[in-house]
Image (tube, rainbow, N blue to C red):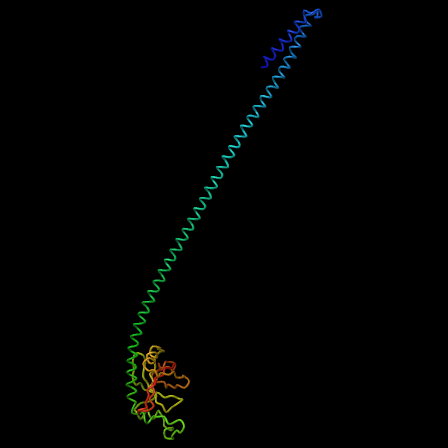
Amino acid sequence: MAQRGGGKGVAQGRSVFRGQENTPHAPASKELARERLLRHDACADARAAEINASAAEREISTLRNQHRSVLEVRKRELRLQMNRAKNKARLEREAKEALAEDLRDLHQAAERVKQAHINAEAQLNEEIAAHDAAEREADELRARLCLAEEEVAALRAAAAALAPAGPALADPAPADPTPAVAAADPEERLEELGYEVGDVLGSSTFGRVVACTHAANPHVLYVAKVMERTDPLVARMARKEYPMLQRLEPTGMRVPAPREPSFTPTHAVLVMTTRCAGPCCRARWTACA
């Protein structure tokens, strides 16, 4: 390009100076003309070089701009690709975290279901054990009821044995007590019958049947069944069989200790009283502790 421009400039300069050489005003010296021609060629070459440099700079600027545009486009494309990759990685990470959380929730739910199953099975076993225990207790209560019925029969037999002493141990009227009856000693009456206070009239699994008196009314003979331990089954059975059952306050109860040292006054007592042997005789059962 520079050669084309330079050649043209040199050709133009030479044509001008060559035309001037034929004029009457042309320089006389050829060397001077040659120097001028050389200077003119040099100036033309310099201008051509400047033009070529400017064109090269413009071309370089154009190429740089084009390259910059290409680079910007490429950067934008790479940035978009990088953003897509980041979003994809973020979505994958969130999906993995959500899946891990769902797995933890499922594991915890499975553990809760398993624990609930274990608790339900344990509760079922407890209910089965309680049912078995209730059945055993019912069997035991039925057995104790049979024994209590035997005790009632023994108490009835003891009451029947003491029935002839009823008139001698009858209570006087509350309004006008007779001196003879008031002075009667129930322990002497027991001796007349052949018994002593604390004598064992019968025995069974639940305890002993003893003869005793009551401190509030010493003229009433009591046939007491002393329990080895508090047994509400016998009291319930007695209440059911004898509707006239009453509760006696323990403050007025005097149960003489028998000759056995194992007896204590804190044992439950089932008492039957016999006031007389006549038609007005009533058998009353009383439970006290």
